[in-house]
Length: 203
Image (cartoon, rainbow, N blue to C red; front, side, top):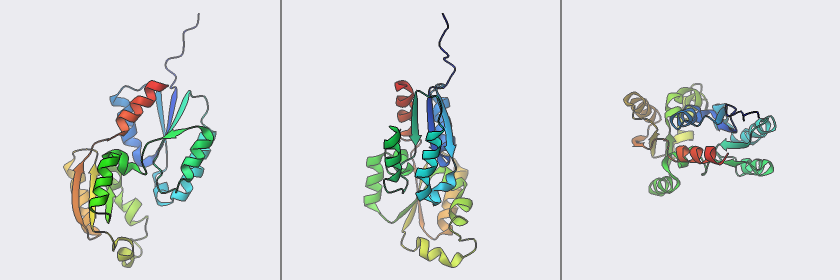
């Protein structure tokens, strides 16, 4: 009798490119060999209205998997992403955005209540601040728009996935660059790890 192909990943995780390193780390650390991770471009963060169509296209091309899961929050799509996922019967990470599932929804809500005028950074956004934020918002060409974008913010909170002094220094420099006070909270991978372990076990 032929043995089942246990080497074939049975779960496809379609993720945001801003989470790629963390998703792969969680899969490796937990030996989730039945999970395959594929990520869409992180620059979609700057055009959230394009996320639902991009996810739809990847879902349509998903192929032969026992289970497909989407590693996005709502990410500013105003519920449009959830409508796409409902069509395919696919779940996603809990929360409105990655800041919530890194820090935990209740913790994030408490931070937001404490100071709603907060701009958040993660490890990924800190590494790519110039490309995604400074250049992505056109501040490299029009620095006079800095006040328009960040004038109503009071602070930057760096939700750190790793305890890296160089990244902390870079996050602090980014906060200084946009003229906001800086705070750092080491949150790790938050709810991402337990969620992926659960998804892998259910396949």
